[in-house]
Image (cartoon, rainbow, N blue to C red; front, side, top):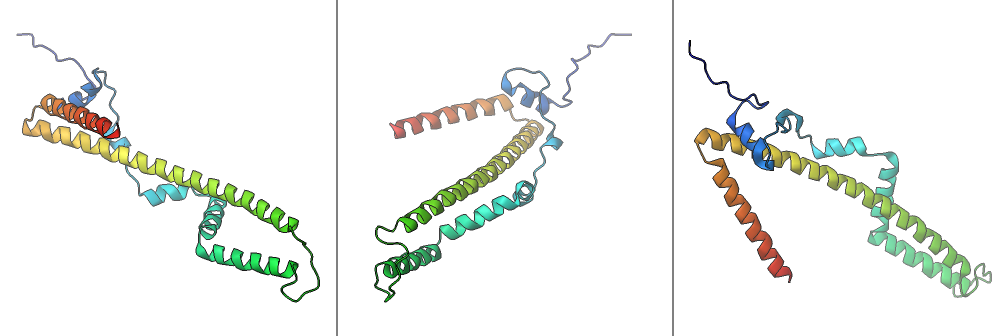
Length: 180
């Protein structure tokens, strides 16, 4: 009986998976499971992270960034100043010029509004991180599918990868020239 050559045992059963595994320069079996990279709806993921405090911060920030907020403050400041300089026909001035109480109230409001804005920005950053993760998962899924399809069609994967690397290098060089 003739002894047959046993191929090396790799965790990847198909040639396309071995090609993907080798893209980092080492065929070591370190390729994520395709089933692991499942994409969920962005809103579903974001709702898991969302908390009541964040919702309040978003609401306050949305209101503070509106023209309604500007109009309310313009009217409030106008009434405050008019009432305290005697233009409203009142003889009672509870915050005389230079309006120290108004200054303190506006300063406190600015502190809280800045905090709400930062909380909202943090929530937007978390949402951006979720989008980045979804983009990564989709890109990885697309690359794995593309390589498998290329293998099935008999396309030289290394040749295509070389072309991609040259195109990326040329694009980066062009961007560097444009930035200079």
